[in-house]
Length: 223
Length: 223
DNA sequence: GTCTGTTTGAAACATACGTTTGAGTCCAGC
DNA sequence: GCTGGACTCAAACGTATGTTTCAAACAGAC
Image (tube, rainbow over all chains, first blue to last red; front, side, top):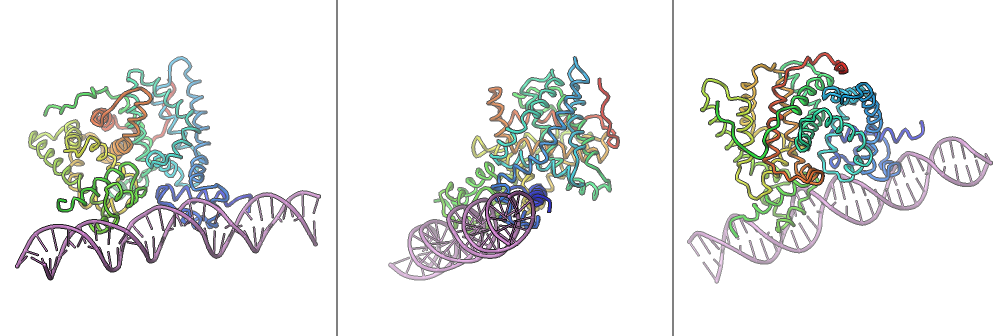
């Protein structure tokens, strides 16, 4: 075997199982038996289950963030004085995600689902790890959004970015199930790229909507 | 004690702990010790942990769906020939949520977080239970959305509804964390009502955005 | 007061988990 | 050929979980 083929097999199995079932619902025994390796191999190679979780994220997030930074460099270089538009920034992001070299056809949806889980499941160690490692790329994207929406207040922008993250993470994390439902209901096939193509205008429109007055809750008058 | 005060104390404790930590991360022992009751009481009164989870949802979801159906009745009665507008439908939903009688000040955010968790954590039994019990109200809301967006194709509408669900479920499921971050960053306090008030225009704008051509993936030309 | 069904209590049960151990295997370097 | 470090393996460890048990306490009806 190549030097520590075991490590990769553990990572592959863990990635898929985590994406399917979440972190706490996936045991090391499931992972090792799917990977066809010994139970002790996880603690030998990674140290702990938490460290394995972080390694799974690092394996796809590190190259993704490099791709992303390059895309941002290109974007900023191409329009030196005016800030990049919202569409351009969103496309830079989605393209980097879609164009990532995938291990298999499920790659992109596993990727998205893991990101969604990272936000959703309250794994303190993961949140800290991601903040430490990848805050730079995230910060650059935020700055791009800020430049593209100067009309928004900081608070409005903050919440709308959370809404965007939610729509993206949620949709992509269950994209397989949602595609199946659509296939059954309307007989329509869909690719992840098409979902992204539908998502981007939705997000852009939401982010640029007229700001509401958030302190007043009032029912719109009927007709 | 009143007849099975124990049941309510278990439900209260479970509700709060589930919202804080998720389902699998909350043990029956945490729940019973927080509730000040014996461990066996859960299995005696509810039968199993899964049944307790469902009971927690039923306690707030059943009255909520009744409120919701009434709001939908009113809405449809008030505009007999033209279908209710998108804003009206969205407001009927959020108002029903916000106006629910709360057990305490954390009530609404617990409510929202639980709904988010129900979507996010892959609890098969919960999903089945919710579909069985509450599909009617959900179906009515879908029909309202359909009437309010006749310009959208079925496929477009399908995906945009998923985007809306995602933004809502995701934001609400981490609303406490997101509020804390905003408090630290910009020193702004936020209520769940305000989040909802910001979310509605975002969703409405996204749902009504011009439809994109989803089969073509093309980078927007620079500047 | 006694009886009956309901509810509580402390303890145990079986199982699953993450982790550790220590013997065994493999292979490059000398 | 031997040695030493890297790796694998089966087994065990300690702990935590959901669930069950059965005796004790309680309540209301007669």
